Length: 322
Image 1 (cartoon, rainbow, N blue to C red):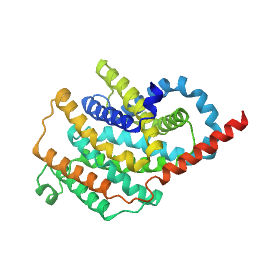
Image 2: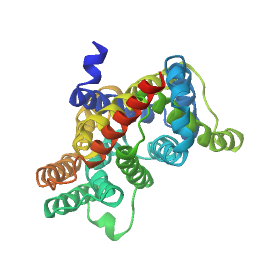
Image 3: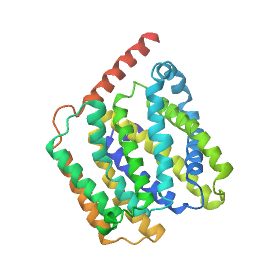
Image 4: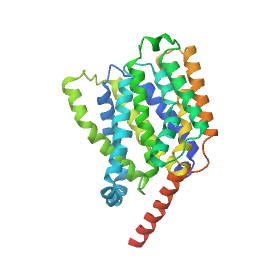
């Protein structure tokens, strides 16, 4: 059954959106209770402990690949594990979960931009129009529907941190297309472990001079959830889906997060939706649809094809070694 799930990329991406929407809601739920770097570090530390018994053999087999490609794996860990999640949790100290979820739905267009820069995929007129609409939607959200906010430059700090985090995650998603032919568990074990190690200095500084960590049932529940679902399962599923369909075809599923997350935020956090949320989301979604429908036909699967070719070569090498 798990094997069938692992070969169904769009079901995997739907689950990823649900788990990551829950991560936003949970991060907002414990904001001011568990400091951001501490929440991120404890999340990855527990995720590594959960994953290690299952991934150890794969990591040993993939060790030669890590030695050859440590720079790329380290960059993926830095952008997608260390920085993105810490910045996201910091943003949730200042901005409501609904805002963060709507800003996160710009992911598809940011991935398209990074795919152009990293993988050489050309930006079509439709993608350019989609990017413009998406940015307009983001401005609608961070201005709370009031253009006077732009005139007075009164941006919410959390909104800006969330946008910066999404820029980094767009780079991570596009770089995944260049991932060497690691096994799924091996790559996840290395990236989570490296991401946790790079976050450790910031965690120690925060614990020494930052706000207190209230370690109670509320904090423990949040840490267990974010370690298991948005970390181990979501990253395993997302990495596999990108391997199967490529980053650009996986990216539009980001816009499911506001759908799942809005319901969770309203039910569990008591947040109230406003008209500017609907307007901003409509613009972002329109941008995503336009960018997807008018994406260039060539180059869409280039990174995925390279990965599949690399996987085939690596499997052949391993069979010969056996």
